Image 1 (cartoon, rainbow, N blue to C red):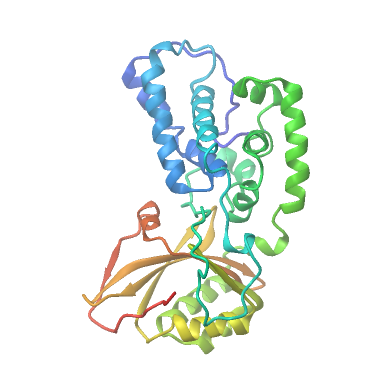
Image 2 (cartoon, rainbow, N blue to C red):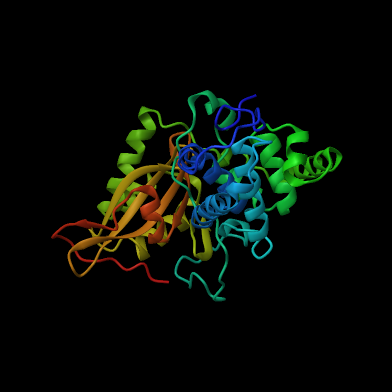
Length: 344
């Protein structure tokens, strides 16, 4: 079975190469290393940092790289070690629905206890070797990333390497400096736990067919026109709205519609939405709010789950620092409309 790069993780030994060749050859593995660190950590910020750390460690240790394993395997070993070290401090990330039950009070405070929680983040779609598309499809879907964060770090890495990347047990054992029996035992426990928390069918979005593309256009227009009635026509009855870093979340069309109508849709033209995708093709909306300077400023990245041509789940990641990862500008220019205020 192919891995993310369409290669087996253990290849024929490579001869030592000049430093410039090392840089050139190592660069090709960056997208899959970023995906690997993201699956482990649930944060695109942390994943980017640890990929940088991986390459720095590899550069410094290159003189000792004797080519007994592939360059790719060596980089995965360094990256996995860096991830496991990072997870000693923060081993889990969450989404609001994983912390509490839904609120039925859309007028109340969004963070009454003042909680500071490590949240799962979205990731831009990554380039994948066409030969590995089937093997990697769905491997960074947000619902799966959320589920992976609930596994202990060692079980998490074993499950990712065995079931997502299709590495052999012996290869995983070599990477983790453990036995094949220990790898198989960890995999069995990880699979059993993931079965209890794995995403259901409702967590998986419909494909972006023509009807869903029309749905997304109507969704963006409803936000930009502050038209709650138009938006309600697009939502499932059991729709969920989550807004990290706020831990409070809402479920049901009536409650979600009331929250948006009273606290988000302040004036037509106050928001601009830019369509994009995240986490392996899941539809997303970059949301900009107009400021006093007449410009629209980055505010939140909405990740949408679509079911049966309706919006089933909205996770609005209120973190403008995510925008550069998606190649999105921090500002859009305009000379119309007042600024909204999403009060907490």
